[in-house]
Amino acid sequence: MLEIYVKHNMLDADETDIMKGAMHFKTKPVSSVMTPIESVYTLPGSTKLNLATIREIYHRGFSRIPVWGNHINDIVGIIFVKDLIFADPTEETTLLHFVHVFGRGVHRVWPDSTLGDVLQAFKMGRTHLALVHDVNNAGPGDPYYQTKGVVTLEDIVEEILQAEIFDESDAIDAETHRKNRLSNRSYDTGVSHVLEGSESAKFLAKPEVVRVALDATRVAAILAKSHIVEFDGNNVEGPPPKLFIHGNVATFCLVVLHGHVLVSSSTSGNAVPTTAGLWSVFGANSLIAPDGSFESDVTVHVPNDVHVRCLRIPRLEFQATLYPMHIAENPAVLAERRLDLQQLVAPTAISVVIDDIPTPTTANFQSDMDATQVAYELCVKSESM
Image (cartoon, rainbow, N blue to C red; front, side):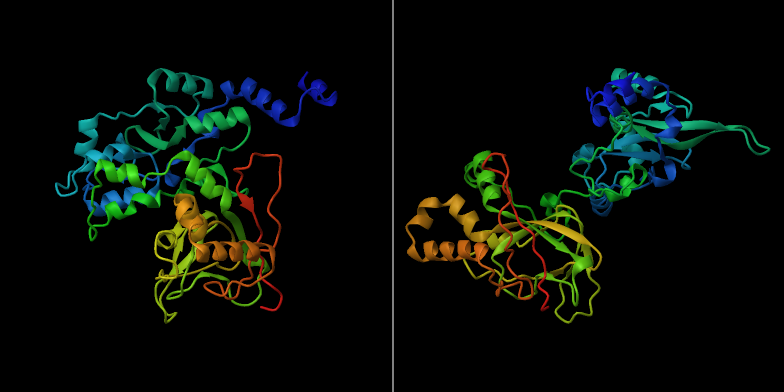
């Protein structure tokens, strides 16, 4: 029946897939969509919640983590990462005690349970994750429950929509399969400094919070003046492009939106670089430092065979949005801003930080969207490099 509607252009392909998924998902077994337990990040109940453990859990980027007792088949509970705010790292409480205090139980289902039944259980139990277990009769010993995997509400929704769902914590890649997505999580780097034991946090007073906070209008204005730049390691000959160079002046901030970059803090080049992925931020202090005074303390470059997309926020546009009157009253700043705008049109190389990468010359992306749409540019390496 659906094919008839599609043949007469009364339904498109996406609508047809959703309707098919909604009709058939209720009879599908859990085993067809679950994530195997081998691919699930779990922790033993004897783990102590010290600073290093909390930092590791946070950097993993998951919202719920199964906790097991004597072995992986003995899942005793689930911790919600948001509950770790109540954990005192100096007390080094065990995960088992933490689970017992907060009472996060585990909803268990069988591999042959249908997705319709599991969805109903999720709605009634107000949970988004269930443990899949089965009876193991193999061997001479007594039968026992064996943990097979986990199934989430997102898995069921994807079966209904017949498409994968990518949220803000997923590494967006068309070739990434759902079963491997558990290893592609990221985390918010904005609060990482709180988890560093060597750094102390200074709390702001309420007037200071009001002063430094940006409302949605200003954030939209800053994004509208920023640009999306792309670097394709597959199409670059010679050394990989460097986005930041250690010791060089930087006048912009970069936010990684897709792919990953390599970061090195040594000028000798012998140090092993670290990988920075989705939502990594570089040069943030350049937006608030006096012009020309911020020097990058790291070298950031694009690895070979990697496509990287970044949000580039110019310091001048950031300052102009925050302090429009100050910018307007300063002729030197106005002249610098005009020159910066001209460089976006004329093919002039960036000589401050990115010496080997020409300024993007592709015209701003035009569409029928509103004026707050972020300008889009493609940064490609010249043939002379």
